[in-house]
Image 1 (cartoon, rainbow, N blue to C red):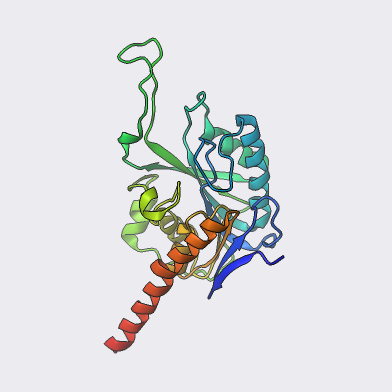
Image 2: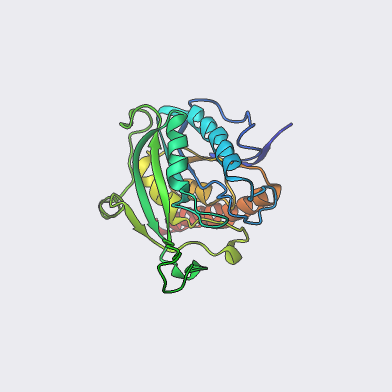
Length: 267
């Protein structure tokens, strides 16, 4: 059965399950950027986001193992996950998933703190103004930077397209920019273009292959296309594949056409 949902130039959307797909060759990917399901009961179309925590960790180990195999020896992995969760009991999600990633073979490089600056997400203070049982909630997420065997990148074009001010700003491990609107995008957990764009320019060369195994609304592929990378996205849900395809056409492919036409007419 053909799982190829959409392809254009060097961009491909695969409608399949990241854990069981055979659409990606081992050692073929330069950079993985993804935000997996958080298991906080988000209403996805095709994923149960409310399983037991131990089942969630088992699920995480399975897909993280696939990612490890897909990466080249000098491949990198930018994993966007919560710092912790407090729904149905406190859990150290960031630490637990980092440890699982290391247990399947990944090496740890660093952690970027993404400050979404969105305090309004807060839902509870626990015991109000009392030491009895206060809740501490940090309005941040993590982008854990992992790699396969070698941190020094030796394959690929060797061409970096990052500007000096971007490099100076983004190598500071606290990133502050807003999250993306669910309503505007039409997906329960879209991430803003800024996130994959920074990861792509900081951690990959021009023409590298970038993979997102939980493509969702397609932000990673849009960033890949706009920054001259090859992009592959795996998405289990057909509705989200269609959403990603539409966004790709509107926000990336059409935009590039306009830029090229404007450049031609300027000459």
